[in-house]
Length: 264
Length: 271
Ligand code: HEM
Image (tube, rainbow over all chains, first blue to last red; front, side, top):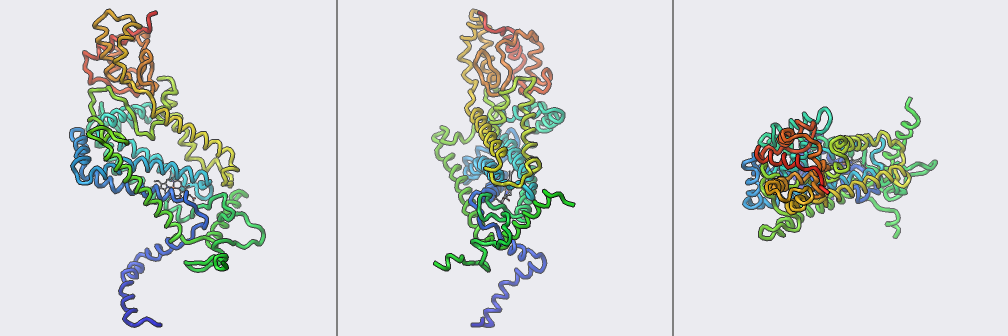
C-alpha cells in the first residue's frame, strides 16, 4: 500500500534536518558509509581491545574535566582539594576513583591492544603508521601517568616525582634541560606542580586526542586485519579461478542470509 | 618500477579489499555490537574498582585497593619510599641492575631508548608478509622474552624491600663499625637512619636496594671530606654530575654536617 500523503509529509519533515546537513557537509553520507562499510567477517573479540582502549580514554577525559573543576594546582591547596573531592563533593570519590583506576586500566588495555596487533602481524604493510602512531600513543599515555601522579601532592607523589625528574636529568645532552624545565626551580614546588598540571590536562591529552584521530582515520581507511589463522582470512592467497566464498559470499543487502542456514 | 616485494604487498592488500567487499560483514550492527559490549565491560570494571577502593576503606584503614590518599607531601621528611606508579616499576627496577654511577645511564636512558626505537621501527625491519605468529619464530621468541622480562622486572619492583626499618639497625651498626661507646655517634647514626637515605642506599645490608644507589657502608674510605659531603647532600648533581639523588638541603646545615661526619666515619665493618 502506498503511503498516505500525510505520512510522506511527516517523513519529509523529519528527515529535513538530515538532508539540510548532508547538503552542506556530506557528513550524513559519510556516517552511513562508516557504519555500513564492510569489515572482515572473521573479526574476533581480541579486536575489540582498540575500542576498549578508546573507551578508557574517554572515561579519563570526562572524569578529568570534572576533577579539574575542583582541583587546585598549588602546593598549599592541592592536597586539601583532593581531600575535598574525595570526602565532600557529591560523588567526588567516584569521579576521582574512576580517574585513578581508569588510568591503570587505560595503560593495561593499550598494552593488550598492542600485544594483539603484534600477534596478528597487523603492523605490516600497509598499516605501519597505525603501529607508529600507536607506539607514540603508548609513550604519551605513560607520560600522562607520570604527570598525573604528582597532582595529589602526597608523599608518594612528591618523592616519586623527585626521583623521576632526577632520572630524566641523567639523560645525555637534553636530559638536564628537560629536568630543569619540568622542575622549574631548585626544588619541586609551585612551578613544578603547575607545569605538570598544564601538561597533564592540556598538552598531552591534546596530543593524544589528535593522534587517536589519526590512528582511527588509518584504521577506517585501511580496514582491520583478519585473524591470520582464519582459513577465510581476507586477502588470503588465491587458488587460480577460486571465487570468494563463505559466510557472506552469496548475500546481498544489510541483513543477509547464509546458504546453509537457509537449507536447514 | 616497484620491486617484487612491494608489488606482492600491494597485490595482497588488493585481495584484502576485494575479500572484505565481497565476503565481509557490515561494521554496523555486527562489529560495533562487540565493541559496545566490550566498552560497557571497561566502564563497569572502572566503576567497580572505584567502588571497591572507596568502600573497603574502614575508618581510615586502607582498603583492599590501598588508601584514599597518602600523607601530604613534605619536602622536609625524606623518610619515604619513592615509589612510582606500577607501570613504571620495570624501569625503576632496571636501575638496580646497573652499577652506580658509571653505567646507570644505561638503565635510566640507554636501554629504554633502545627498546623504544626497536619498538617503533618494528614495521620497518620485520618486513616479511607472514602474519601467523607460529610462522614468525623470531617475533614469537622475542615477544615471549619481552613479556617475561617486563613481568619479572615489574614484580621485582613491586616487591622491592623498603628501607624504613633501618632505625632498628643502629645498635648493630654501632657494634660493627665500632662506635658503640660513642653516644654522639649513636645519635647521629639514628639521624642518618631516619633521614631517608636508606630508601635508596644500602648501609651494612639494610636499606632499600631498589634504586641501585651506591652502598654507603664504606663511604668513609673514599676520603671525600665533610665539606664535600655536605655540599653533595645539598645539591648532589653539583658533585656527581647527573646524579638522580634528590637534594637534602631541607634538613639544615647542622644535621647535614652530622650526617657528613657519620659518613666520613663509616669505613666498613671493623673485624
Ligand atoms: C590511545 C590508545 C589507542 C587507541 C584508542 C587505539 C584504537 C584502535 C582501534 C579502535 C583500532 C581498531 C581495531 C582494534 O580495535 O583492534 C586500532 C587498530 C590498531 N592499533 Fe590501536 N589504539 C591505541 C593504541 C595503539 C598502540 C599502543 C598500538 C601499538 C603500538 C596500536 C596499534 C594498532 C594497529 C597496528 C592497529 C591495526 C590493527 C588491524 O588492522 O588489525 N594502537 N587501534
